[in-house]
Length: 228
Image 1 (tube, rainbow, N blue to C red):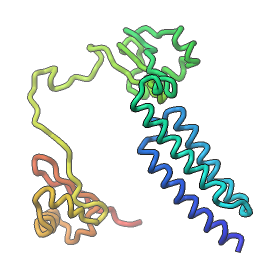
Image 2: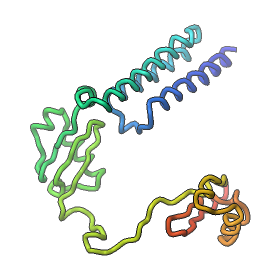
Image 3: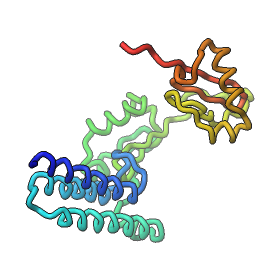
Image 4: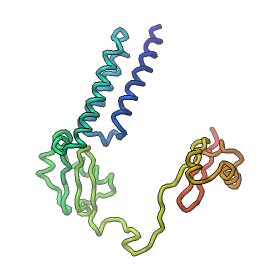
C-alpha cells in the first residue's frame, strides 16, 4: 500500500510540475536567468517533499508550486515591459574581451576566472584570445564570441559566390508516423509518399525512421536500423 501511495503522489506531482514548467515557457537550463533558476530549484524541492513524507498533504506542495509558476510569469511579463525591471532582475550583458584584450578588472568585478573564460572560448572554437574581437558575458552566464574579421570562417558572400535559398526542411515521417499536416502543407498525398518510399527500396512506412522534404523538392529518407 505504501508503494501505491508513493506512485500515486509521484504521478500527480509530476503532472503539476510539468504543467508549471510549460506555463513558465520554453527555456534550456543554460538559458535560464538567475530568478528562473532559483524558482526551478524551489519547485523541484517542493515536489520531492510530499513523496518523501506521505503524511504531508499534496496541497502543501501543489499550491506553492503554482504560486511560484505564477510569480515567474509575472516577473517575466514585467521584464518584457520594463528595462529597469529586466536590468534589476537579470543584470546586463558585459564585455569581457575587447579587441583581443581581456578586461581583467571586469572579470574581477564579476568574480569570473580565466579558466572559465578560456573554457567558454574553446567551446566556441577559439583557443587564441587575439582571434576574438569581442566576447560578451550574457545574463544567462554564456559567452557570446565575435571573432576578428581575419579569424572568422569564410562565407560565400566573402567570395561573392551566389547561393540559392535553402529555407527549412519539412518533416514528413518521424519514426514511422506520417505527419499528414506537413504533407498537406506541401501539397502532397499519401500515395506520393508511399511510392517515393518504395523507390528508395523500402516497402512500408513503418520502415522509415525519418523523412523530410527540402525547399528544392528533394526527399531525404533514413530507414530504421535493425534491432540488436
